[in-house]
Image 1 (cartoon, rainbow, N blue to C red):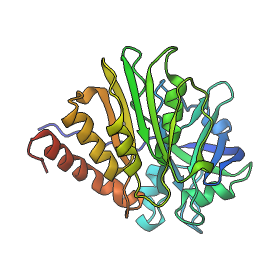
Image 2: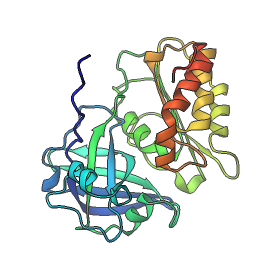
Image 3: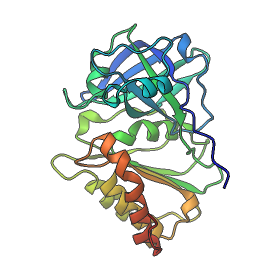
Length: 281
């Protein structure tokens, strides 16, 4: 059997903080730029994401920054920690990338970094990834998510072709977390309050008067409600898999490292349950 060539770690881009802005009490915007993004480019998807690399405290990494070398020469506990964030916008002319962060005080790693970021601060990142853009041939679009999916939903709404029919539901903690989005779609903002994450989204999508024609859907956010909406769309409504971009960005009770490690098994189990096929290890 022919051995597959070793998969090389992609080159990391070095980005510099250009400016920051507090959008809402819990959403903070960081604009990144600099010569280190000269080779960064996107392919037109509206859900592009990057892997931000946060170095271990007190550790000095080689210059130029080489993630493959770091992983080969440094103990695992000193490897940079990755956190995944949507590219809210990319301006190729200015080489500026906009990234929005949900802030929960000092909780987490990326949020506190973003809240403290100042012009001139630097961070390395990998990417972009992403695979979704609104299909201009679809008869209508459905976009659903919580705060974690808001940047991708906003970018997708702004990318809709003129005259596109769309329903967008975004769940946030309260009215002060709503944002202005430059689109012609009337976004339905759902205020969670003390309710479980995603409960209001499930109710809203179930109550939707279903338009006729082919649907193209984007559903992302906390894995629990995403699972239930996948059942509604895929099983109850019979939407073809290729017309769905649907995945859990995060899961209650898990940090990103734990969620990313368990996500393939979770997805396989959900698909087996909802598609009626056995899961494969």
